[in-house]
Amino acid sequence: MDAPGYPRLKLEILRHGIFPSDAAIAALPSNRGAKVVVRDYPTTSGLILRLPGDLYANARLRPDHPEHLPLDHDGARFVLRTRAGTVPVDVLPPPRYALESRRLRSGKSIRMVAMTHADRVRLTPLHGCAYHCQFCNYPPLPYRQNTVEELAEALEIALADRILPHPHVLISGGTPRPEEQEYAFLNQVYASLLRRFPTLKWDLMLAPRTLHAGRHTRRTYDNFVQRLREWGFDALSVNLELNSPVARQRHIPEKDAIGRENYLLFMELAVEHFGPGKVRSVLLVGLEPEEETLRAVDDLARRGVLVELSPFTADPGIFLARHPEPTVEGMESVRERAMELAERLGAPMRPFCVPCSHNIL
Image (cartoon, rainbow, N blue to C red; front, side):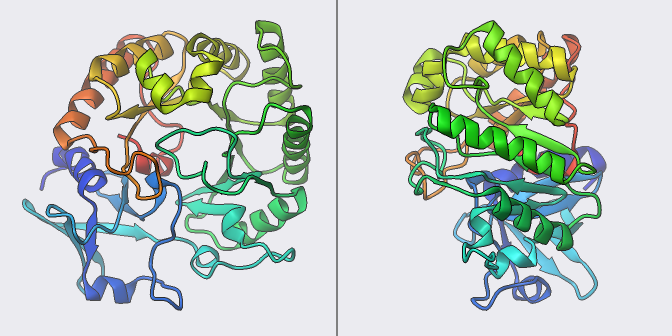
């Protein structure tokens, strides 16, 4: 397979998954239950493959999928067996601390607090979520806070158990209840952690919110974004996810209540403070028509937002578990059209972290 075929191969991996051979399983780290992957968010519950050309792909283990790609190990390296031939790949397995579900001093499983994907350590201040997005597996989880001390301990463990040599940190999910005590807790987490680990690069994923619980206005958004920059965050992820009113109301009701225009306003202000390319927004592919996705790409790129397209994943733990996933051809079409549009508008779709692009198109 020549180099131009690898982007297509990535889409096939995202859609069809892989099936490791016995030799591949034996070459992978595993836990006492012989598991080689960790149950995580729908788009990150797999092995990360690095393809030629420095392309990263999240590969779900899907032995029952009729078009899965076999992953093998020839005694010296991992190889992916495709219709066009054998492709050498690097495999980035889950960290040992996650495979073994290591316990923190509080007794809590570290997997409730931290997870590493390639060079990204994800910290989770809130286990569970106040929102009920139908493509996410967080809403059914108990809503609990993870303390600053638990987060710091988990981060230290993750930094000592690195998959790639230069990790960065993403603070993300779930979304807090719109209550003053919840906002105050997260504000303390942000300020304390960044002060405690000043040499690390920090990103934050969040829905539009304000410093204190209250009205969503241009001024209150601007005040909060300024504070995030002062605390030391390097970049923000504010995921619009869906564009059409019908899809937003059906699949992301609480985010729809915030309002699409408020999402765009929040990101516009964030770009003013963080700079172009430092504010990204994920759009889900497969839950609404392609033209709706492209309308969102247009609105985001015009504001200097880095657009990332992520395929809808029908995970068994979500409400939409039986909803069909986008086809490889559909993903390829929207990706090419979106990239051309974003480039024309001066906001090319080039992820600020290449290994983190394992679950985007």
